[in-house]
Structure formats: structure tokens, C-alpha cells
Picture 1 (cartoon, helix red, strand yellow):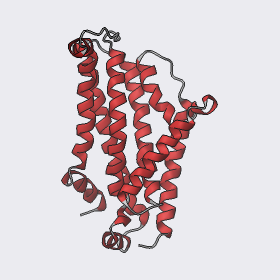
Picture 2 (cartoon, helix red, strand yellow):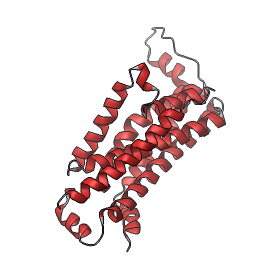
Picture 3 (tube, helix red, strand yellow):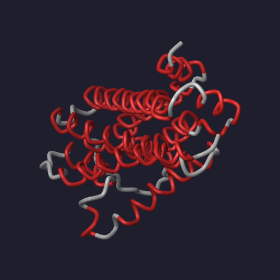
Length: 246
């Protein structure tokens, strides 16, 4: 069995793929439902207190999906990718792999399979949210939705690449995932600086709502930076893991 097939089989047999599918599919369904029935829900539980809620709209449905899906989804991606990329966390497995293949040969299928799993899961969730919104409220802008989905897919690829870099710094799976999430939080905080925000990967997250609402495309800068950082993270992880003793 090749390392590529082994990684694909491992992803399904450990049921980690279903965690990713489940998270994005669940919030893909809940986003439109919540947006459509939020006024009724608020009225039912409000206890007579008048609470102003925005009217249902496709933009609100998609924003609700993304806001919830990314919070839990990125955490799930970080842990699922860490379980694959932090292979040194199990010394026996690390020795077995390192004596039979090079680090690039070990990491390549783990990177690619987990990147694809993350992107496919996100696309499935977005499709469910789009269809649900179209049925319950109205169809979001198709072109904006497709473009925003592609940009967010690049961001999720960056998350997996960053997880690989974190795995080259520490051996444990929880430590790898927590470092990844911590770095993403720091990037988000740095993004509060207006002069810097337009170049950070976190800007791709903000593109989702803007593009679906009909905004123009102005994300070449953060797109290029995200791709460069992803490639740099992968290259650095390979170099650091080659120097590490099993």
C-alpha cells in the first residue's frame, strides 16, 4: 500500500473525515434556517420583550453559516491535520516511516489529503447553505458565492500548511493544533491595524460576506500573501523535520 493510499484510508477509517463533513454540513443547514426563522424564535422566547432583528436575507443566511462554521471548522481542521502531520508524536511510527521514506514523501500525501478534505468539506457546507437559502429566503449572488468560496478554500489550505509548520516545532498533536489556532488568533489581532489588515490571510475570511453582498474584488494582496505563507510553511516544515531525530 502506498503512502498516498494509506493516508486516504486512514482519514476514513479513523472517521476524522466525517468530523469535517459533519461540522460544515451542520452549519450549512443551520445558517439559512436560523436566518429565516430568527424573528419567530426571538418572538417565541422573548417573553414579551421587543427585540429588533434584521429581516431574513440571503446575505444574513450565508453570514450565519460562515460565522459558526469557521469557528468550529478551523478548530476541527487543525486537530485533524495535526493528527496526520505530527507523525513524530508516535515514536515507533516515526521510526518506521523515516527509515522507509524521505520527509517530503511522508508529508506530501498528508498535506494534500488533508487540504482536499478541508476544502471539500467547506464546499459541501457552502453548497448546503446556498441551496437552503435559495429555498427558504432567496438565492445569494452566485458569482460572489463562488469567488468567496475559492478565496476561503485558499485560506483553509493555509491553515493546514500552518498546522504542518507547527508540527515541525512540537511533537504532540494537541500542541500542534493549539499552536496553529493561536497563530491564527494572533493574525486576527494584528489585522485590527488598518494598514496591515489588507495584506493578511484573515482578509480572505472577510471577503466572504463582502463578495456575497455584491462587493468588488480587492483581494489580490492577501491572496498572494496567503499563498506565499502556505508555501513557506510547507518548505519550513520539511526542512525542520529533516533535521529532527525520530
